Length: 189
Image (cartoon, rainbow, N blue to C red; front, side, top):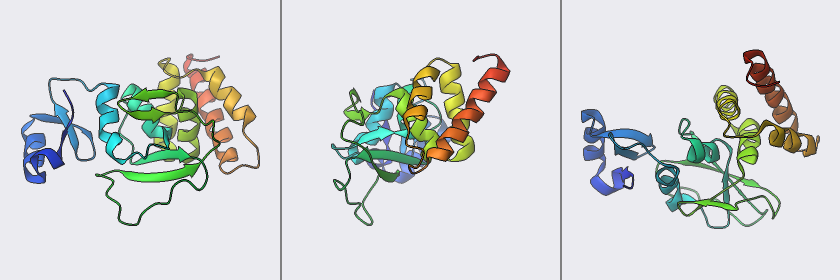
């Protein structure tokens, strides 16, 4: 079953369906029938209409599509420099989009529901770089603890990051905080 959108049924009916319990909240302006757990393809379907084909979903949104963590406030999209110009007032169907530049080989080999996703470790590193502090730390912590993301792969990405690059210091310190929390909980050594 595909997600139900407020565009499908109208905003008033959508709000009523959420209030009455016919739908459970999935993402901005999207819900799922309460008795059906959303799949990665369902979560990706909410993003597909607003993700340009030359971009890759990363950060908290990439982790959300993969593991169903909390729906992010912002969808981080990565593309080659100069390929995308944000249009003022563009309809993002309830999503706030953030465009970032990345190298041509950034990723996107995983396609879910028509949406290209960065590798899980790249999503985690980008979540720490661009995501809201506490939410990003908690989401990456859970993803590593639950085995959705490989800690060694994040280590490699963080080590390879240009120390002068935008957000490099934030990624390093955030990843060290996550590693420390994992080690103290016994989930990581």
